[in-house]
Image (cartoon, rainbow, N blue to C red; front, side, top):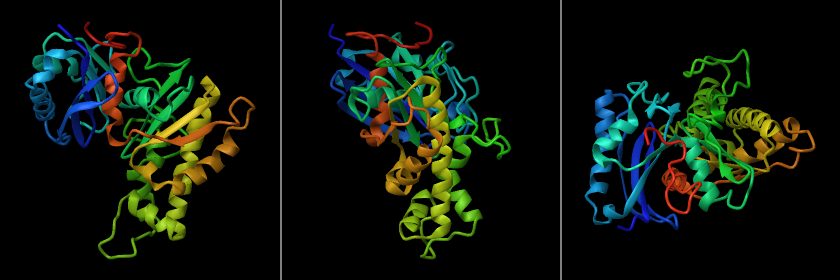
Length: 321
């Protein structure tokens, strides 16, 4: 039997997406459902099953040799469980077991969504050809994954590189993760908008966009509060990036997610702040570039994890195999 495809799953707080992916990174069949993150654990699992079942019924399913999963975290790849900060009902939830009720005995590779995105950008995106890279997503949360010595390094539980929960303000606000002053608590899209609104910013139009995208639009027009909100977020990101780069010696940082779409409103102050924080010779030339894979980065990356160490299929960090 030919097994030249993988099933990829991307689990986030807003949507769950799935696809059949070939060895060229092409999504041959894709679908998604709302996560229903505020509902019960079984309800969220039903959303996942509603994605997986049509994939298993597709004519190409017989060619699938593994299932790659990138999930909002923390994840525990050793035990096949997840406890996403943004899915309250899933605490130590047996995700791999739930997936296998639909997909059968195929190998399942589970990593955090940041690690999945790193695998995707290294395979088909902005980190292609880079030996040492941090790939980040800055959206409703802030996540990341590490490419070191040319390979994805998800760590024993699948969470390595989760830069969003590095503390950059020891006396800062309490983060939902339990820490204080986390990068995510300052630099996520949700918190950029929250800070701007609390500081008195309002969109020019009465029914204008109250999200980070609306703040970015105002920043481009020169609104001082909007500019301050993005400057603050950029400094938090730069502090986290500089710490990570100093620890593991990076050459490239790839940034994707909705907030990255603000362009130079974010990247300009981020590069300036990095000039202040990343000062040692081995990190002072750190390259910062936008991601290339867009909204499907998590799916491409979940598939990439299955091929990370093999010409066939290898469940890197897989649970229960």
